[in-house]
Length: 176
Ligand code: 5GP
Image (cartoon, rainbow, N blue to C red; front, side, top):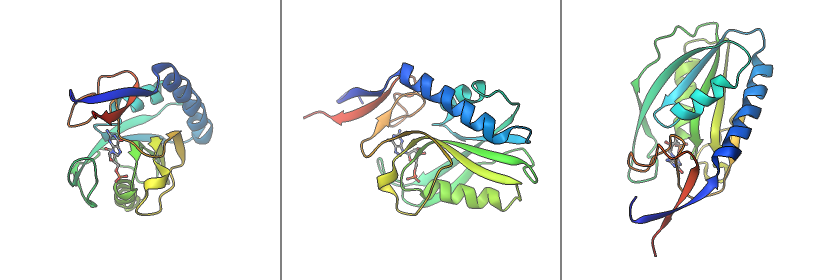
């Protein structure tokens, strides 16, 4: 990443404002329900930490980790669950919290996997939606920001494990 230039796409202030709004949207949707928030490691960990602190309703939390085999910045479509949840989600209201929906392949796999465990409801909250890049149709229920193209780092998102610590979301630009 040292050889890449970065420019701020979403500032920490913009992120904070949007996450507070999302917290309100999610709280209204799950009022009086049995909410389990499932974060997708590693990219969603900061977003999820901020999102649940913006809720005004109680929730349980759990995490999954997925491996997708591919090269560079592209998902191959071959996805595997490498860390499962430890919560019984049967009859519960489950909200998956993911960093980015890109091709849609990862979330299609995860939704199908969790749906098989009979939750009462299953929805997805994505921090960033790259709507134009879908390879399979996928619609997130709650979306923080929508972007067209480009590769972003920061706020938990990495490029080859670097850049997660950055408080703003930045676009990587290849050095000319
Ligand atoms: P999908 O299966 O939707 O193509 O893959 C989504 C996953 O690809 C995200 O969870 C994320 O890990 C990764 N990804 C897609 N776009 C970006 C990006 O711009 N930056 C980073 N850091 N990861 C991305």
